[in-house]
Image (cartoon, rainbow, N blue to C red; front, side, top):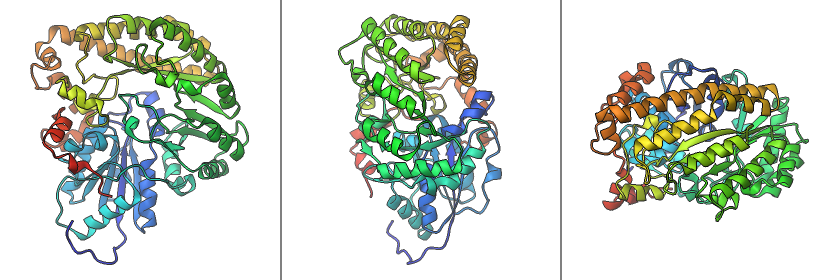
Length: 528
């Protein structure tokens, strides 16, 4: 930090690895969809570095092909981007490249949520990131060979603008080549979110629309490269300023010439708005229902709970599906407002009333310091040190439920899943979906994801009832990770397990609280 920097920096060879998986792509659905979940920020960083004159190699680890074949050996620096569920892959790869004396940096959701842990395994850990901060770190590392391991850096917030699709196109094009069938172009129209959902990392980030003129230029450019492109909007909630965004789309491209996928709140999806979305090529919508007893602000049903909420939302979601071919409804289970069988039975009722909708069930997960509510869970001593690889919203719940014993919770969850993915429900969903591709997508998801979750939760429930060390881990009687989990993770990592740093499977689930209590949280304040 305190060294004298030279005036000019040579052209560097910089790698960027976006980690999209923590396991091999062993199903057709994962092979089709994993690359399509690539995010925007790695492409953005690549463009920023290229504008500085560096040679950049961006690749994606999707668990399908060998990563080492895609990057040169003589790199000067490597950036990683990872969600928490892929943290161990990132840790192992960082250890490998650092053994080659190549410095590494981590950004993305895991870096923002668990900087205390990530700092043990990378030279730099990024919180919020902007161009100036990226350039500063690369310049510092190039000129200052003596550096402090695990330096945490963060900007004051998201950047005010991002490179265009045209600037990102070389990286998008290479990414699309890895997608075997469905090819989704990632775009974003806004940053942050105006809603305050207690479980969401974007709830503490001020809402910020990006320039409409750039959005229009991006769509026009995309139509010159792909005959009928499919765009996946990465906004936490697309269309907060609904008329402005739809007007921009309508001005930029002819209706239906681009197909769109978006996550949006039910409060925005009135029938008039949904008709307008359909006219403009929106084919997939992912509204968040979240809970029957809480989080009603996104559906404008703050005071409506229970069966009344089921009835009103089911009616609205069925209306949406009359216009939008593919609708996925998202739920969060295990919230403090949940108690007894009620939330699960009401969700089964929703499944029956909306037979064409694909529901996804997320278990309450507190990702480190991602949201202030997590500090409450830590203060209440309710955190379970579930290994990162299982923190993918559906493999494990790392907050001890307030109103359930563990076996009871998983019994209710299993009953809900068996109802949702029963033969009758799958056939009803198939017959109520329009178009063969959508029918087959939901059929594959039900018979891969759905059935796999049922088998997995059955095994978890059996272990809770018969495996004392396993139950003791969940009851917080021991911090020792069950062998069942360690074996599962190490087998999944395959050859990368040899590079996983010692003790990396263990983390402190109370690190956020400890940092606050020790008065060291100024370490995580903006540097730029």
